[in-house]
Image (cartoon, rainbow, N blue to C red; front, side, top):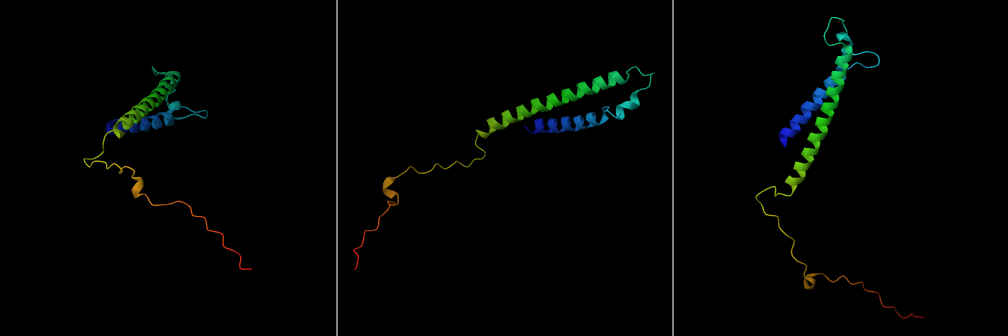
Length: 110
């Protein structure tokens, strides 16, 4: 489960970097790849970055679901060698008397 958590952190860091590199409305770091002599133009770069972003988002979602599944299955197992003490069964004779007592009316002294 720790390995899955590490993969989630790595995918999140890669996703942050990918989003920062993407071209926004005002331009971004991807606008530096716009020379006409390149094999991959701006359009292909942005397509790749968008697919990479969606892929990383899907990876984070799947790994998060797997982590939740493994955490739920681990919660059923005992966490230590110490046995869990069961509460003692209810014994009505040992229970305190909690019946309400009404005060008796007193005769008026008049």
